[in-house]
Structure formats: structure tokens, C-alpha cells
Image (cartoon, rainbow, N blue to C red; front, side, top):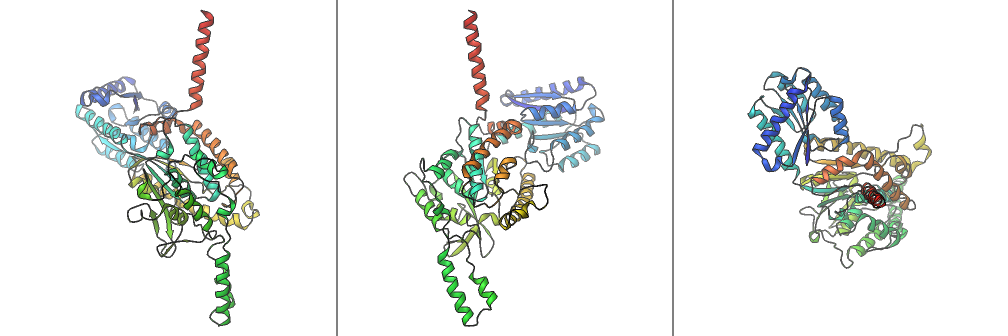
Length: 505
């Protein structure tokens, strides 16, 4: 049963109940099949409305601000909307695209509609207080219901080095914990950049987050253990080549000593050949796929053309002929740690330099529910000089994370405004996870701890304030989202009740 909250700031409850009855009657007359699965919940108090919206999952919100209910209705309606939809929130107790404001066909109604438009809700309904008005309200709500029942699920994974990779696996494992009848590797659309490209590439091949994590750590399942040599292969070959070239240029007078020194630095500390070979081996094993066109679901991997600074999406039309392992290696070429990857005469580096998650690609591919996981969050410390005390690597990474994080926040806000009918859920590290991830993204040793802490912290955050919203949005995709421990507690209580009945008998 879809619950729809009908909010009216009426001074007396009688006209509000009459309005609810009129709306319910029109819905059952116009669309009996759909209306059979809809229940309108009336609320006339602003504090109670906010409490109910935050504690329960409502499919839609109708805010009636017509003067029929009294002058406070208009100001209270706007107060409710402004309280619900803070511009910095990516997801609230009810989506903007599920929220409708009902106004009168007059100047005051037009002013209210204009103000509501700045909040980017689904829209304002200009409706007279008659049968035609109630019919128009219901048809808008019905269209919202129908639209939300169509669409796809997408997972968009950002970069973040080795630590970010295991953070993403921990978050994904936590989400999987609440999805008893749906495997995340069956997601319709997977988008990955840098470390996220590695995870999404294996998920597109049918591996779940738990199997990927244990494969990387212990070599269990369908993928081999990843060793230090697969990640950290010093770029001695290029260094030797540049040493000879720089020395020759200096001897012939082509370069100054300072120019020769700059040219001596390789394009990456690590060659990246070990990672490329590892990915090639795994994705060409029996049962695995190394071609975008052979995958069951859509996979998009973002990289950056080093010479044009353009973002390239491997897996999209025109770029789906590139082997997946090369696309992943290109996407993960975080300079100056890794050398760029050469593909068809062009050089590609980390996709995070030009995009964070490619969530726009997911939206354009038909996603209506988008899970965003972004490990690249700068550390926040109240102590002056904390970052500087950790050394130059952390200082550099703090600057990079701050740059990408600020860009991503603006992109999320803009995309949410452009596509209010799409549900976005963003997961980023905080607390214990952020402290553990503060440092170089290339640290190799803390990976099991990061994955486990990310799992626990995400489960906690879902239970505390994300559960109802996630349950509602997954339900619209015909996917059950439930807490196994709640179900277990229910079973235990039922068994205890049965045991008590047996003893009494």
C-alpha cells in the first residue's frame, strides 16, 4: 500500500477531512486499480507532519495551500517545504519529485508557485476547489506513481586508491546485507572511475562485493589474490630512458640543468604493468568477460585523455570496443603515482581528474535510483596544523580531495535540480572510517580494517536515518530492502509466543 501524506494547515479539521475524502473519491473513480493500492494520510499540524515524514516512508507529499483552509495555510506550506528540502541534502524524507504544492488560481497562488519552484519540487498544481481541481491533483499524483515504477538501478563508484576501493566494497557489502532477494552485481547500470572502475568491472562480471574483497585479500572465489607486486611495480624502465635522454640533451646544450632535471622525472612512480597484467588475467579466466559488448548489464568506465583533458567513457557507443582491463587500467592511472595508459595511440590517466562518479551517464541511461559511493572526502580536524604535521603526501592528498569533493558537491546539487524525479543516495566516509583513511591512498596494509569498518558504519547509518528512504526507493524497483536482524527478532518473538502457548496448554 502506497502511503501519500496530504498536508493541510487548517485551523479546524473538518474542512481538511472533507478535502481528503474528496481526493480519495476522485482517485477511486478515475483510476480504481491504482487507487486501490494508495492510502491518503491527512495531517494538519506542521510539527506532526515533519515527524511523520521523517519516521515513515511516504510515497508522495501533497501540500495544499489554498485559502479555503485559512490564511495560515500558505505560510505554513512554505515553511514545511523549506524545512524538508535543505539545498545541501541529496536525499530527504520524501523526494522533491514526489512533492506537489496545490495553490489557488490567483496572484497569491502564482507567487506561492514561484517560491516553490525555487525549491525544485515536482511542481505546483493550480486547482480550483471543485471536482475538476481534485481530478487534476489526482492525475498529477498518478503520473508520479507510474513514473516512479519505471526505471533502473545504478551504482556509481568514485576513486580513492586502495583505501577507497576497500571502503566501497564495505559499503556495498552493507547494502547487500539489507537486500535478501537482490544481488548488487545484477544492477542494471554500473559506473566506475579509478578504484571504482576496478570494483565495477568485477561486479559487471557477476561478482558480489564480499567475493571481490575476499578474492583480493585471500585469493578465494573466482579471482586471484592481489599482491604488492601487482600494484607497486617501480617505473625503472622509463627512469633509465629519461636519464639517458636528459643527459644527452644536457651534453648537447639543448637543455639547461634545471630543464634536464624536470625531464628526468618519470610520468609515474609505478609503471602500472603489474596491475594491467593482473586485470588481464582475471578478466580472461573462464566465466569472465573482457568485452563491454558481451556483458549482461551496462558498464561505464571513465578516464581522462591526458593531452586534451577530455573525459572519455569506455563502454559508451564508440568506446565499447576497448578491452575492459585496459579501460580499468586507464581509469586508475592516478598520476604521478601511475603512468598513463596508452590505448590506440592516445594516453589516458585517472578519470577522477575530470569526473567523480559519472552519475550523469547513469541518469542518461535510464536510472531512476542511483547509489553514489565517494571515498574522496578531505579529513576535517579542529586542530590547526594537523594536516601539515602528517607530511607532504597527506598535504597533497588533502588538496586533491578538497578540490574533487567541492566539485562533486556542486555536481550532485545541479544534477538533482535537473532530474528531481530520480532518487540519489550518497555514501561517504566519516568518523572512524575517515580517520583510518587519512593519508596516502596507496597504503596497502589497512585494507581489511577499512572494509570491515565501512561495513559496520554503513549498517549503522542505514539503521539510524537511511532505512525508510532506501526501503521506499528500492520497493519502487520491485526490490525488497529489509533489516535481517529485525526479521530475526520477529521470528524469535513468534517462537517464544508459541512456546508460551504450548506451556500454558
